[in-house]
Length: 396
Ligand code: FAD
Ligand code: DHB
Image 1 (cartoon, protein in one colour):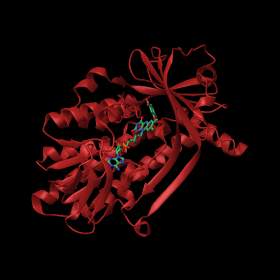
Image 2 (image 1 turned 30 degrees about the vertical axis):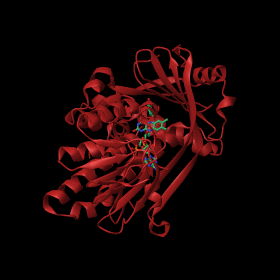
Image 3 (image 1 turned 180 degrees about the horizontal axis):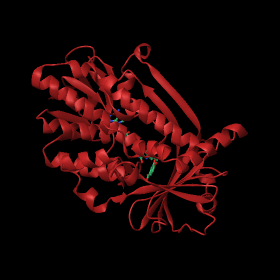
């Protein structure tokens, strides 16, 4: 079978938030790109993941003309609730941050909006590709070999490769291990996430610390709630009957003042493990890593998707400068610029995770420190402001 040869400026591996936003941002500057994605369109548009968008991510979607459905169907909250020792404490994010909001709009809806918009504007996205291999990343003519969905071998020649292929993709692995500077922390917690057909029990998100473990109440629509509970990351989902899930949710979320969680049929459930990870080597020759390909955060701070979009905003501006003026300075500075913000996202995600989860291996002293941390946040405007400005998103 003869090889299908394709030429573009930027070859993008992965149609997650990083890859799709990058393609959209580049097209605005007249810079061609081609996306290759290993999963099908239906699969990426149906995978349940993140839910919270930072204020500037919302603003960016609107600027790019892909925010219409989000503005109609998203949930815009002025704050969140922190719950511990059976008491609720409201943090008014809008007041603490000078007007920024908390937006709940599911990641797969963002994906649908971006894929639809990209394809309507003539973008090329190859779904269902296999055997992706990067070559020539140390040269100025890198390329990506892959098999198209129908099995036809393809060769994508480009000026640059953007590795937007998530934590398990091939891009980071294409950088020799000896040249990668990586940092990692694995947590002893997992999250069991469910979707349930029941109207939201509360109009905003509730993050709860409880002796039995963390719990989080979120939502997807006026009919569907999204809920998470801390569990053992090695737990088999089969051990978690619906009755057991509800029992834990009731115990961890309910308050002394009689607030009640509404139940409904559970329509989806799954367990995720948690890690913090940074590969500081975000550039190797003509390969640039962005999003989960370069860094992972535990989900408690709702940062992962937003960090991915921030990376590609920096990368798109650097590529724009290169194509407009032949100036490589921002490409050379890409990793340093992106990492300054990434490490703050890593810090915040670690802080929220540590403060809100219960760790059987932690000493009684550490438990008290975590409770003091929460008490401080709800009793000091300075501490609440620090949490709020990170939660709604630090400046780009
Ligand atoms: P991905 O979304 O992982 O996209 C990578 C893409 O590359 C995938 O589509 C994958 O199929 C494709 N790919 C992989 N290998 C190949 C290959 N060989 N060839 C071609 N394509 C390939 N973040 C938030 O900001 N807010 C939240 O509220 C939040 N909540 C979360 C809740 C949960 C339960 C989970 C699991 C995550 C959450 N996150 C949250 C994190 C967020 O989902 C990720 O950080 C985000 O998806 C990263 O985007 P990305 O584009 O970098 O990577
Ligand atoms: C959701 C996910 C998060 O990680 C979070 O911190 C808040 C909400 C969600 O999926 O709705």
